[in-house]
Image 1 (cartoon, rainbow, N blue to C red):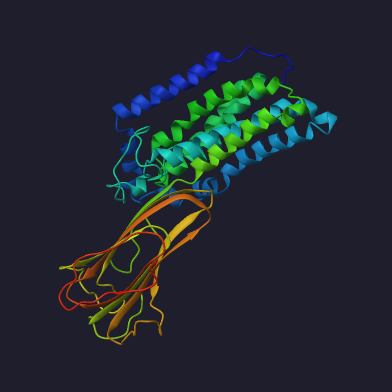
Image 2 (cartoon, rainbow, N blue to C red):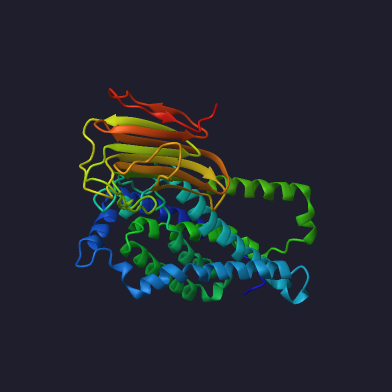
Length: 406
């Protein structure tokens, strides 16, 4: 590490941005993304990366290398204010920590993943999913798919930043980062988790970002900087902006029967039901915490497959914005005995319940419940915060409402 203050690496910064633009144009003019995905899907073993031991190891433990490097930089930066021998690592430590936070953290995992709305290969029609294919920077519904950019690949390409920290070993640093990044990219593409562009585009973007941050390596900020109100206000605004963008989620779950829909939603299990092969009555309780519920009666419900199957359909879309770690699930379980509705031996009794954890700034959900028209119906519909819509009742049917807001 040299003590000389080099000039701002304008050429490196512009080269990274130009390469990112060229790669984006190439993926728009060609079909490399779907071609590579088809190659891994149509082989003897679909998505072979899921069974390769080395790719599983990279998936589980690969990102930890960048996380540890960034954490070590943050620790060195903090120690430099109280331990004189660590003072020379004040700038390099800040550089390593900020490169991790702004590159793999802010750029890839918060902004790109949360706002781009690009489905993963396994979520895309033709590859095992139901959503449409999108090219890089073809923005969709925020949170509807989190393929762009690859967080794992971004953590691997993070080590391109060592080329600016150790300029005398620039070639070795670039070669090592390229080997790590290509291995991680191959693992994620072969697992069906990312498109080829998702794992390649982080490389030039992080190179440009590392070049822009590299002057920090030779910066020695005084301790009083962190006590200035203007600096603290700017830091707080930046943290709040990151948090506000970090929790964008979109889910599109469609179910018909007790089996799990491929590629989406929570785990659903068959509900053991006693009685004849086809129930004479359906008892449904819906308990939604956030969102609206629409119940309709279908003239042609799904075919009855015997005890444990459901002669009804369920479709849910959810979009929310909250703190990291916030989750929404929609689960099904047997209707409790001894409730307001007497469950008979010839009844299919099901309870749909939405469960949210964490803190949400904005949450919006739409649930549609399709009920068979030719069965007797008792329904308890509960919605704590939303709109309840019930379609036209067939002759002789009834709906019981319980637990609704006054």
